[in-house]
Image (cartoon, rainbow, N blue to C red):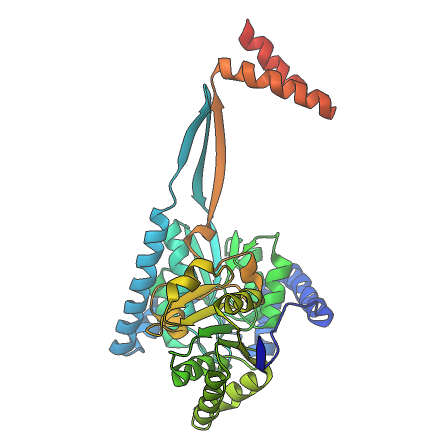
Length: 422
């Protein structure tokens, strides 16, 4: 391996000051309810309407403000997300099996009752995030989805976001951002039912709020700044690789980018392309900072080393710009979502193609995948037995309990052995 350029890779680390600040906020919000919600919204977003929840009339007005083209394009994207979520849901079958005579075990999938969905705003109004959390929840069978999105500071809502939230299936829509939005959903403030699960991305305060609220309710995952990895061989196009790296770099100054290639000539050709494209990139201010601090280029000795480098990085998004894609698909293990071939790109996954863009970052792709319909469901087990099976299993259970000295447990077994042996 040779390093042509090495940047940082943002990882979750204990941020004592952020944790303390968010903890104090959550305590205040839990104690003082909607008064604290209103106070923080006014402080951070210059936003304190009479009611944070949009009425049906306000939702209709927001949708009417969207162009026909925008509405149609959003419908196109949401149809893809819904189709894929429905196909995933179809794979989640109940199970019942007789593992030995008279011993019947099974599992079933039960959706959670209430989900709190956060659709981020901030630097970019990421209205496409609405379908990524709301649609899979609804396909899973979630009864109530409460959705929050931050206001345009001092102005109100972004119409495209409201349209996306409503079309995705949100039951309640609030124009409210930050920690206070997560507190409203998690604690069930203002006639909102307490969420069984929270989902959606945001800044470091939002991520910390989700971390601290976990246990009060479930969460999708803890997402940091976005990441892209690209594995490219010498048949790839350096201009296309550069374009895709910069496409993610514009997200955030802390976004990270990785290129693993097979030759120094390709590495330097891609670097040249990045510099040329940055010169005319409309979002250069952020992308240049992000690439400068967090962009990395490694030259691998062979395909297997390229796979090891990528798996160690465990990128949120991984693109394959290679001739023999199947070799990599069969061997790669750590990524959030895989983009096979130059015909697809991260932006397709983020916006329109149908797979979910709420994905693991900060190397958490080593142990989890992204958000999908299954995350909104609990897989629960059950068991039933015949009397004869209860006798057989009860004898073994009683002996096991005796060894463990859990005598009351043992009695629950022997009482059944005695009862069904009569």
